[in-house]
Amino acid sequence: MAAVSQVLKRSFSSSSPMAGAIKNVTVIGGGLMGSGIAQIAAAAGQKVVLVETNEKLLQGANSRINESLKRVAKKQFKENPSAGESFVQETMGRISGTTNPSEGAASADLIVEAIVENMGIKQKLFATLDEAAPKHTIFASNTSSLSITEIASQCQRKDKFGGLHFFNPVPVMKLLEVVRTNDTSDETYKKMMEWGQEVGKTCITCKDTPGFVVNRLLVPQLAEAIRMLERGDASPRDIDTAMKLGAGHPMGPFELADYVGHDTTKFIIDGWHEKMPENPLFKPSELLNKMVKEGKLGVKSGEGFYSYKKK
Ligand SMILES: C[C@H](O)CC(=O)SCCNC(=O)CCNC(=O)[C@H](O)C(C)(C)COP(=O)(O)OP(=O)(O)OC[C@H]1O[C@@H](n2cnc3c(N)ncnc32)[C@H](O)[C@@H]1OP(=O)(O)O
Ligand SMILES: NC(=O)c1ccc[n+]([C@@H]2O[C@H](COP(=O)([O-])OP(=O)(O)OC[C@H]3O[C@@H](n4cnc5c(N)ncnc54)[C@H](O)[C@@H]3O)[C@@H](O)[C@H]2O)c1
Image (cartoon, rainbow, N blue to C red):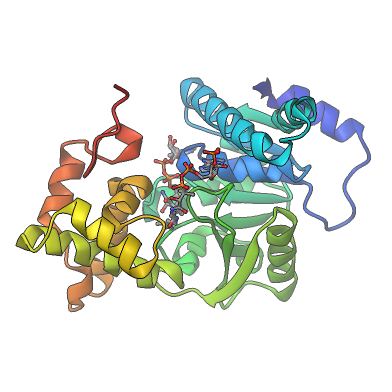
C-alpha cells in the first residue's frame, strides 16, 4: 500500500474535484467494515486513505481488500480476466494507508469512521479529526448502535456530521442506512445520500435512534437465539437451519453472529442495556460474555459458535 504522501501528490496533481463533490475519502479503521468501505469507495473511482493503528493492521486490511476485489473481479469480468486484473490493480492504486489519523484527514471530503464500537474512543477520535480536517469535510460514523448525536458531541461541525451504516460484507450487502441528527444540514444529508449511491448502495434514511432500522430489529433476534440456546431449547445448527429454511434468511442467527463478531454484538447489547435497562430484549447474555472473554469472537478469531480454523 502506497504511503499517503505519494498518493496525495498524485491525487492533487490531477484536476481538483468538482466543488462539493466527494472525491477524497478517508476511512478510519481497517477491520471487517473499514476495509470493505475503503474498497467500495476506491472501486467507485475515489481516492481513499485508510487509517489504522499500526502498519501490520494496515497490511492486513490491504490483503483483505485485495482478496475481496479478486472475488468481485472474478464475477464482474468473467469473460475478460485481464480486465479483471486491471480493475483490481487500479482500485488498489487508489488506496493509500497511514497510521496517523490527522495526516489521513488532511485532504478528505468525507471521513467514515469504522473503529471499535466504543463511544469514548469514537468521540476522542472525532475531536482530533475536527482539528485536522478541512472545514468542508463531512464526518460519518459506521456505528452499529451508538448515538450519532453523542458521537458528534465533541465536534464543532455538527452540521456536517451523520451516520453511514454499512452492512457486512460491505462489497456485497446493498443497503446503506444514512442517519441524520437534528443538526445534520440538508446539504450534508444530500451529499451523504449521493455518495452512498455513487458507491453502489441503496440508501434508506432513518432518525438517530438505537440501532437505526436493521439492527433494532436484528440484534434482538440474535440475542433471543442465544437465550434459546442458553435455555437448551435447540442447538445452534438446528436454530440456524430453521431460520434459513423456515424464514429464508441467507445465514442463521449463530452463523450471522459469528460473521458480525461477538465483540461487536456484545458492545451493542451492553450499550442498549445501559440505555434501556428495563427492556428484556437487551438483557446481557452470560454465554456471549463468556465467549468474548475467552476470545471466541467468531470468524475474525477462528472460533465462535462454530469453528473456522483452517484445517
Ligand atoms: C451488526 C452490523 O451493524 C450490521 C450488519 O452488518 S448485520 C449483518 C448483515 N449481513 C448479513 O445478514 C449477511 C447474510 N449472509 C449473506 O448474505 C451471505 O451468507 C454472504 C453474502 C455473507 C455469503 O454468501 P454465500 O452464498 O453464503 O457464500 P459465498 O459463496 O461466500 O458468497 C457468495 C458470493 O458473494 C460474494 N462475496 C461473499 N463475500 C464477499 C466478500 N467479502 N467480498 C467480495 N465478494 C464476496 C462472492 O462473489 C461470492 O461468490 P464467490 O464465492 O464465487 O466469490
Ligand atoms: N462487524 C459488523 O458486522 C459491522 C457491521 C456494521 C457496522 N459495524 C460497526 O463498524 C465499526 C467497526 O466494526 P468492525 O466489525 O469493522 O470491527 P473490527 O474490530 O473488525 O475493526 C475495527 C478496526 O478499528 C481499528 N481501530 C480501533 N481504534 C482505532 C483508532 N483510534 N484509529 C484507527 N483505527 C482504529 C482496529 O485496529 C480494528 O482493526 C463498529 O462501530 C461496528 O459497530 C460493524
